[in-house]
Amino acid sequence: MKDEIRKERLRLLSEIDDLEENCNGCMTRKQFNNLKDATGLSHACKACPVGMKLSKYGDKLLNLL
Image (cartoon, rainbow, N blue to C red; front, side, top):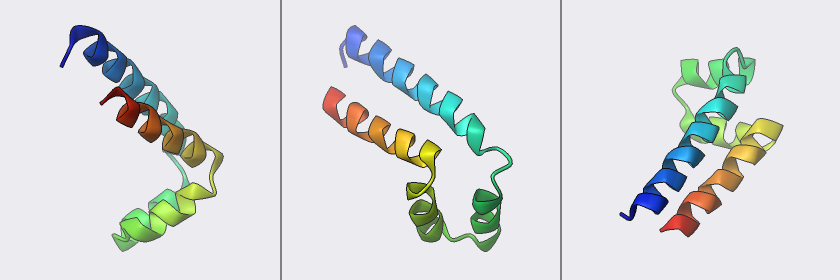
């Protein structure tokens, strides 16, 4: 992986970590973590503004490759 791509990837991952801090204390996330039901959580997060922002980062990371 080229250095510039690696730096961009790390920058994006850092931004993702910062966004996910908003998920700390999320009752929906806590409920699905207790149920061990990741599929339900992914559907619930699609309706969340933070989840929508996070989904855009997936596209950005894919475009790096």
